[in-house]
Amino acid sequence: MPDCARGRRRRVQALVGAMLIGATVLTACGTGTDAVSAVRANQFVSPDGKTVIDYAPAKRRAIGAVEGEDLFDRGTVRLADYRGDVVVVNVWASWCPPCRTEFQALENVYRDTRARGVQFVGINFRDSRSTAQDFTTDRKVPYRSIFDYGGATLAALGVPVGVVPTTLILDRQHRPAKLFLRAITEAELRAAVLTVAEEKAAPK
Image (tube, rainbow, N blue to C red; front, side, top):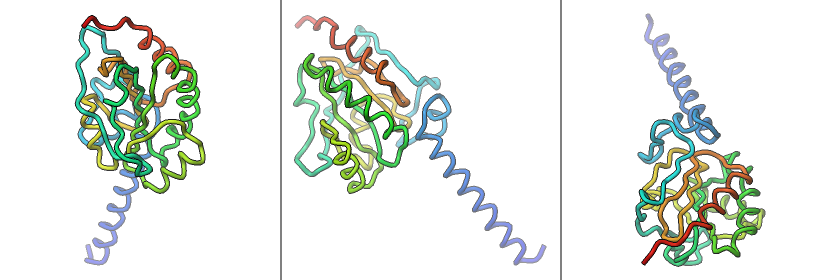
């Protein structure tokens, strides 16, 4: 085969490979089992392909010191500042269509449950900071987000995070109680948050 033909063939193969990789990444920003298995980001993996994980109270373990730079450069966001509260942590990116879709559900549940001692914190992952700022400003998102392009804050959570969006509910001792490795609905998020908020406090 002439060298020029082999060169064209290699270029075509490289292009096809790039297209397949791009399709895989786009699929990851979706919902369901396919999204979880499509990409393994920052060495976080979904166990057994599960997209919803419940952590029984007796088996829950405390997470690390989760903190990071505020998306709008307004200091550091620390989960320790929400001591005694249930905390809903949502991992999102402005380029992810399911993330944009579920924000209204997140905001509604936040407003409906904050009087019960529930706080929300976003973790903005692998995103353009300016685009993420514009998105949250336009949507008037009422809670803070950590800018975590490289995933250091995600690592401190100590739970599987395979794709965006991911939503983690921490109990009042800031232990993982429920994890959604996919987009959530308002009804399921509200039910899960209220269940955790109504749990009896652990004896001191």
